[in-house]
Image (cartoon, rainbow, N blue to C red; front, top):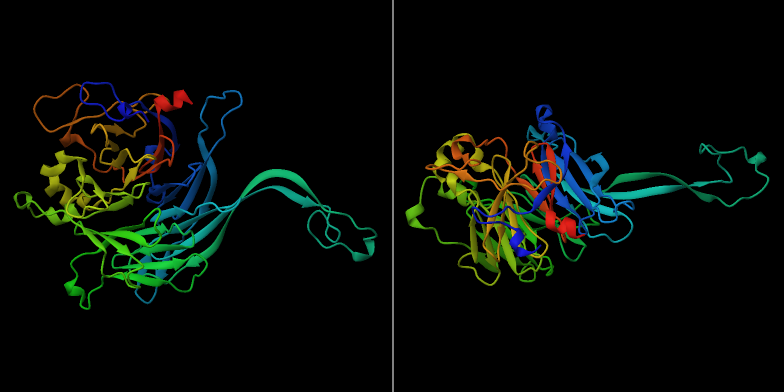
Length: 456
């Protein structure tokens, strides 16, 4: 992306992002089970997976460019849909376990098949996605329907042949990693060694081998001997993209801990602690809640970490622990609304964040179906809206502005009229191109940089 395209100061032209396509049901049909709970591109960006609160995984595949229109980009169409998790009941604890998909992570592709991990609160599953467009015909001992022939009628041998058939996508469960967590799983991350992955819950992080389901190694345990002494919980974790021994986890106290698995088997002692000292002048009843980190992502280069707390996104340099190198205000106009946001529980919403492919732009969600982009080079930012009304296919999105008081421009939105039930919690950025996926309740919006789409 040419840097001038992301963000524009007030009064200048908007960023050239346009609605690429929209998948989802009409607003009035929303049921709890249809709400999208995670979005993830695979490593090439050709596949896009979403999970929902009903335990379903929907995989979209990017269609090849049309031969009639060689310069058109292929859209993402439904490739496969399957039920990943079912609701369960823990009889020992009298606890219902929701089927909601908390996270999906793709494994790097090793062969013709694709693989992904999906998890609900307790159980992680490894799925294999394969294609079949040929079927064998002409068996010696079976007829066309697969039934065994009368052997007395077999008088000659023939070589079975492969005949083309309609493409079938088969999704099969390869492994089920259960009984590893007492608390709710909030993140999974595949290691760069492509052999192991980790899963984190509120108090522990486990390391698994992809081929072994009946045991995992506990690599972080912050559970105190007496639960009354509990002061923080783990909120997210991720492996370093290049160094298989390094991982980071964030906490509800706003800190990040970088751990090195070479140092010890149990990484209770972190290698580095990233924490910003609190400004006493801004101290309030809500300080601890809004400083909780809801997401952490390594940059593609591995040099930086991106974190999201309630009001800001921050970029941290791995070599600087004392403070972030960049801080961006996502919706600072909500600072005066924290009391009502606490009363309606919105203050506990867990927003995610994402890097673009070159680590130059970051993205995160907000309320009123707004999402924000920040250009790290030009320091420009933009607010865009994912909605049916304002998003006609191929039309350039207009930047939105929220005003707190005083003079209002024609298209400005008052902070008092924001819809807090419409929130963009889950976003994903294509690994190499300027295509983004935005989950807005039960709708999946896919946007593309208009300039780049016309250049292709």
